[in-house]
Image (cartoon, rainbow, N blue to C red; front, side, top):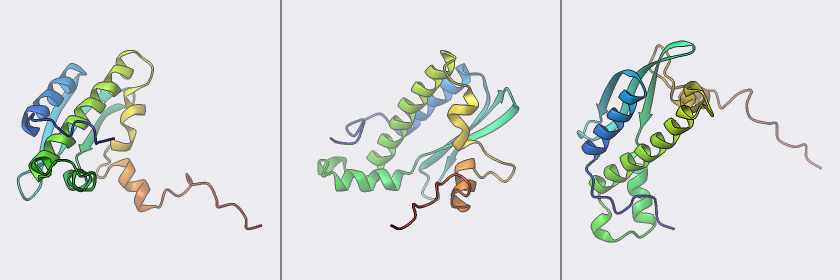
Length: 147
């Protein structure tokens, strides 16, 4: 099955605007776009009031990984570009965000619960990045004893 949204022709910048609108409706107080050294949108950060107070979150797009998937899945050659990978990455993030915000709106989950891996500390690192650097210490189950 091909990667979700692989045929999209919607520009990453348009999708970023849609994401910004969704975040504003969710009561985000600030939204910021970050770009890599090639001028490609690499993340959208937002600040929002939660039950724990003001928190910031970073939603990253790994455009290179999407590009690799497009190539590996033998998507038509005309869609195997980094520009297409950016379009696909941001459409996937938009769809994911829309689903997560629907869960929050339906009060099935708290906003913090959904976005926790993307919460940023005072250095800008996300919780996921911090835990990954610590090799998920305290979370991974011990390996079973050899028989």
